[in-house]
Length: 280
Ligand code: C2E
Ligand code: CA
Ligand code: CA
Ligand code: CA
Image (cartoon, rainbow, N blue to C red; front, side, top):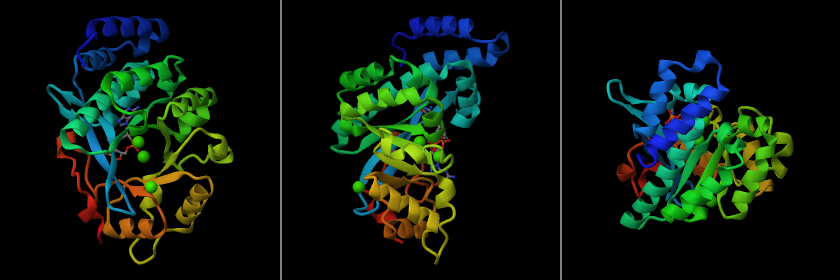
């Protein structure tokens, strides 16, 4: 992560100065930029489990700031600032490279075939350099394109329709694309059949409404039916109970992740045999 740190730092500073209102050129923004280039960002990984077989199919990379005084900080404490200042572009580039390298090394070490999902901000995708950056990260790490999922929020899809060209190009190279937080915006629904996507990540707010003894709600059943019709896979996020695992599996949901299966952990702590945890 430290490689090219100085060059990155100065380039990002210059870019930020040129683009930003002075009100955002704050000590906090400066500290975050330094943290990114000094390698204080670390990744945690949360397993994604196939509900049919109970096998680990992949992990989602989730960024944290290992702050020297304040400890391990969740993204909610620094992503909004990163987005507002444009630093999120540099942050995303670092996360992408680190995730590809760490997961490829983990595959070599453990023999697992699990891939990795990386969250992508709308700002990163808007850059014409984005597809090249992804392909370079794959080539440099040795990770196969089919082992990478790019998670793009519904909101980002709605705000930047031109980025679908970038995603289509990456899909042609074998990378997979997921709609993150699916169902929170509904803005993508009318053109879901035209978007370059492979996976829907069913937002936690839907999973929360799957309660013991009642199975899935009609809305979840409808999303699953629609996904089948469009040949999309569905991963449910934020699964916290065994009942939710069973109801989603019985309704035909492909995969799940959530605290019931495993919390986000350092890569070496990911359980390679997630099977047992899926049983009610
Ligand atoms: P997300 O992509 O929807 O990720 C899922 C979030 O839900 C994660 O929070 C995860 O720790 C949490 N989660 C997983 N299972 C459960 C559960 O069973 N119950 C509950 N209550 N929570 C669960 P986290 O790690 O704090 O990340 C928050 C958001 O920050 C992510 O939401 C994503 O939008 C964003 N994010 C994280 N890493 C990155 C990154 O590298 N780049 C970008 N652009 N955004 C990121
Ligand atoms: Ca995500
Ligand atoms: Ca979410
Ligand atoms: Ca499947």
